[in-house]
Length: 299
Image (cartoon, rainbow, N blue to C red; front, side, top):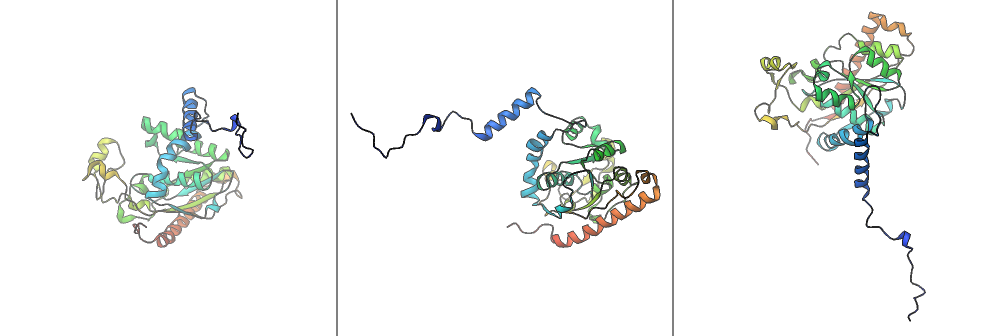
């Protein structure tokens, strides 16, 4: 009978590696699927599904953010760590890809979910309407904006609307009209700061050279663009060009020193709206110079 070597190590059965355990990523995936199937997940009163947004939707577009557009952010310290605030940004790019990139930037780098206010058209399309609600977007109306800000949410708005996202390439980085300033009135009523935001890079992803107006009207769209590659290359023309992106968050503009009733003063609202527009335009001009070429060599 042999005697065990004194130096031999005895590994307890409980400490031995198990080859039946599920790999961690697979276990997380299965747990996620079980929650979705059983309905064991939360949505808020607007239909926002935080888990679906982070684990599925943003995960799908993060490669665009990091590797295709190589987005850089600046002055994230101007985003409040908590409490309601209104992020006001320029809009461009023919398709609203800038909204998605802004959402990733604030979620991943500032740790805050962005609740975007969308145009009526978004909520007239059944599938897009449902997905928008799930990812935290809601209709760009006074009631929804006020409720979100009073709940302490970070709300995003693009006051240029379709005028900005659909403008021709020759007018790139020139802000369009900001409308009636409804976003400013909502910020005043909630006493929430306004964060002017500049996005450089989206203008070059689909350079709009023309517009198929007759077909756009037929399809009920605000425009149907002609770009260097669409419709010439068909579906391939929908691949965005890999322009270099930069997003800068300006110094917050306070509104808490106004009484909520000041939101009903049209002249005050107009002047503050115009001021926000001027700040964003200045940020755009400076950021565009810092960015340099839209298509720098890949390293």
